[in-house]
Amino acid sequence: MQDISIKGFGAYAPTNIVSNDDLSKIVETSDEWILGRTGIKERRISQGEDTSEIATKAAQMAIERAGICGEDIDLIIVATITPDMFTPSVSCLVQKDIGAKNAMAFDINAACSGFIYGLQVAYSMMDNSSNFKNVLVIGAETLSKIIDWTDRGTCVLFGDGSGAVVLSKTEEEKKKIANFYSKSDGSKGDALTAGAIDVINPYVKEIITKNKKVEMNGQEVFKFAVTSIVKGIKTVLEESNLSIDDIDMIVPHQANLRIIEFAAKKLKVDFNKFYINLDKYGNTSSATIPIALNEMYEKSLLKKGKKIIMVGFGGGLTFGAALIEL
Ligand code: UT7
Image 1 (tube, rainbow, N blue to C red):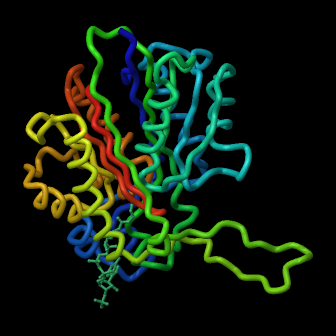
Image 2 (cartoon, rainbow, N blue to C red; image 1 turned 60 degrees about the horizontal axis):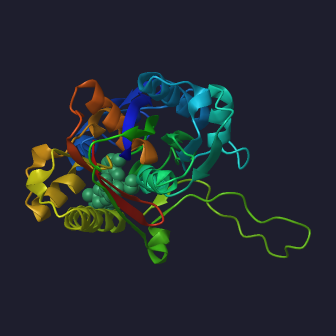
């Protein structure tokens, strides 16, 4: 029976490590505050690499591990809120760099839920008799270019990086579980914003300038995050007729340790079921989940048959959960 499997994992983060102490030289903050409020110890910050370069490195690793080459890829989906340009898309830039000349390529913007949205779109497009056999899904960000480096409330939270997976159609004995639950709430969009280009043309009488840097109502997003994780996990479990005990690992969006602790308590789930690496990378938005997946793969935690839940939340506001049997 034809089904979809994750065949390759990859990740990349810039080599420049910025510690909490390093940040305390730029804004009025401390390791004690950042670690205590978020769990973050350090993050990677680009010294010039843009999102497509970061994305390409993760993609190359995932393709190599899947045992295929660029020409075998039929579809590239990049989730990002920090593209190099409005056009070409990051996915088209990656396509060129990896020689995926047979692929369709496009980006999606769902902020920190982007990787889950990308996976859901990929699974839908690969369903049944479609011609999409090998699909690359990437979460990649250079958040450092849209961060306000004078705002201690946000600049300490984010980092740069990317993660990628190759999904392939494979022959399986039985259909594997793959359930998604994603929703957006545009009415709460003001809680997390980063403006793009202003509307300036010969016909505009009053120019309204948008803030181009990340602005966030942290507490509003915090509440949304906890509710979304709980709702997302409960729903994908229900739709799969499974209980939390059937799940091997939960891979949450890595924004704040306290968010994950709150959600674990509300769900009455052992905290150790959550895979956490935000101490090393901070919040890399759409890249946190695939970077975590790559680490789990390298630690041999992602064996065939394991069931994992991935859950993300963020700007939009958006959230998404995926229950996947590997
Ligand atoms: O991917 C999704 C995106 N975002 C998130 O998931 C973020 C969700 N929200 C959060 O993680 C938390 O709300 C934050 C970590 C952003 C903030 O934590 P908080 O416990 O909600 O702190 P707060 O904003 O209420 O600020 C408490 C105090 C304030 O000082 P006063 O008014 O009490 O004197 C802030 O000015 O902490 C101050 N503060 C800082 N102090 C030292 C804010 N940032 C810093 C800082 N260093 N970096």
